[in-house]
Length: 593
Image (cartoon, rainbow, N blue to C red; front, side):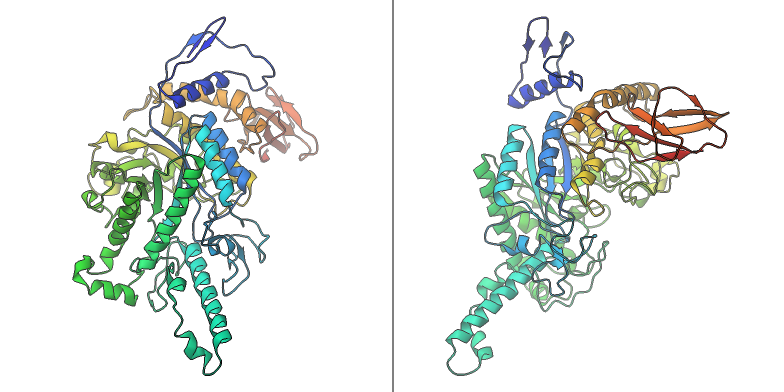
């Protein structure tokens, strides 16, 4: 990129490179640019650190509407991110219309009060008793094709995730509803044809093949299990051929949508995580599979590898590379499925479980060394369903870490996973990681298998578009920064002075330009609350982002004044504080006294 007095000259190695250079030009412009802008003269040569610069978005738990997805894609493009991992199927919902399987969205796309779950899934996550409640809905086929085209124009690849074999309750219940609907239709047809004899006897002669074609559960399965999320009926039966017929049908329809949009479905994520221990043990279909030596399945421990191999082979025949969450590819805490048993040249794994004291934080390197292609997705720094700060006023879970703010994500070091081990979940400093884990930690032998990194947002606690955008923005900017650029301060021995200087420059750019640009584009933001103290009758305040305005109130929020410099207050003052953007967005209110 060259900018001089007369011309802006852009040269890229491909269309995406030219597009990213254009974003660099736009990034130089102030937030309030209207009509014209003064740009600095410069000569810039740039390229991305990683080929995978992604964001994972779950709207399976709660659907936030079509516009939320388009806004996310638009802003990802502005910050040169190129992978949107779309988690549209979950226990709590299925969010994409699939031709030929209307129950997936008619039943799986909604939660309401229906004990039989023939018209909707049982209500949860605050939806309420009616289909009009929060979190319900789905993308129509034509809307997804439109989104694919929109993403293609912005050099973003959308990677769909069809969860299995666990986390599949929505698809399971939808296919059970399909089964019962077809049974009822067959029974009605039989009754219409009966002139003599029992309708029940006649129905037994009806071909039930169509009804069971995509069934995901064995009605005679007596297995008992309980998942982390307290489900006991969310595992697809991996021993039934109809399970793979269902997955192939969904994959086929996805391919048609991608082809209509003029793009290729290159990657499909198959989930694989958090399967309930004990699934399928009581299934007669699985017992029959165990009894047939030629299947290579001798007992329950072989079932997850069997499922993964069958789905990976199915995808390979369609020219698609599979992806999976890390625990979906593991026999146990340390040993992964054998890489050479899969026919796929590329098999991506999202490594998320770096909760240091749980003892499996080395899986990113273990899996890369074993030949899998790894996308760093670590819970301690890259999960945006966690609070921005350790406060009960903040939305989010805290199973991986008590908080993750924009600065913490900015300080993530993808080239040295172990260097990120700072605190345990209870905020105890980590002094000796190997001692905490309890065994030697492997080194990374195949760095070429680390494809990149991505942020994650899960939506159990997130019901609306405004809420989900605020959980993503501005933290996603730190993912974009680290995935594109390696900082000078990164390494086993962090240069804290350079790190502080780098953060000061980054946070200033965010506070001065980026927050306002995002707000102008209709993005609801999470603004950090001010920090403040009262010392000797003087109020001192600041914010995490330089140039972000601070307001204070001395009458419990009735009147607000702009804070510019330390001010004198009464000794017994109770001061309300908030940060504000010019666009009228404000942070939540905090108090100091």
